[in-house]
Image 1: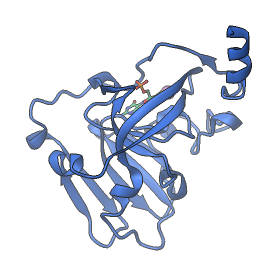
Image 2 (image 1 turned 45 degrees about the vertical axis):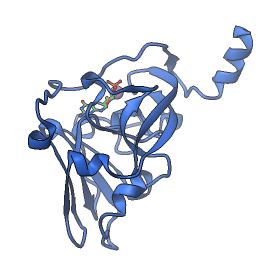
Image 3 (image 1 turned 120 degrees about the vertical axis):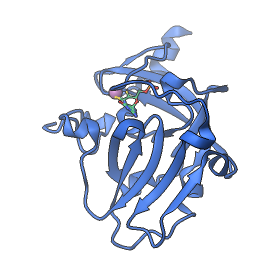
Length: 197
Ligand SMILES: Nc1nc2c(c(=O)[nH]1)N[C@H]1C(S)=C(S)[C@@H](COP(=O)(O)O)O[C@H]1N2
Ligand SMILES: [Mo]
């Protein structure tokens, strides 16, 4: 049985990744603490849009819900298979603004000024989600509560924890890890770990 399992999972694990059953915590900086989300939290959709939108936590949670399943691949070498995420599908958020035709990239903004970039088409990929639950439980603060982005097909560093906004851009702009040497795109199947890969 476990032999079969190995065969089955082999195709799901990109080169030089090891499967873990734990859920490692990885980020730069402090885990944000909130005592009152109504007062301390909002979500801003801005950049090259006709009219920018700011949502309260309550407005965000009132949007239609969805779920997605992914295999996490962290650039540091661990993979965690079969994660079920519940949250707000990316298309429900994008509906709230009119994106200008020249938009080609997105920069996600998280707490403490942390950012992550990706092409617009990767941001809009069906299955991407602004998540608040993982495997049937509310996200813990360590893993990005109250809200984190999940982009299943890229290395997990693009899945911004404590996400607070979306900026639409015409030109690509490095995010936090990208400024620190990580790849601009981050395809785990092509091992795009670092800028020079
Ligand atoms: N805001 C923020 N989001 C972040 C990071 C970060 O430093 N800050 N690190 C990224 C990295 S490198 C990884 S591997 C995942 C880790 O998510 P986890 O701690 O839930 O496993 O979060 C990503 N999202
Ligand atoms: Mo990572």
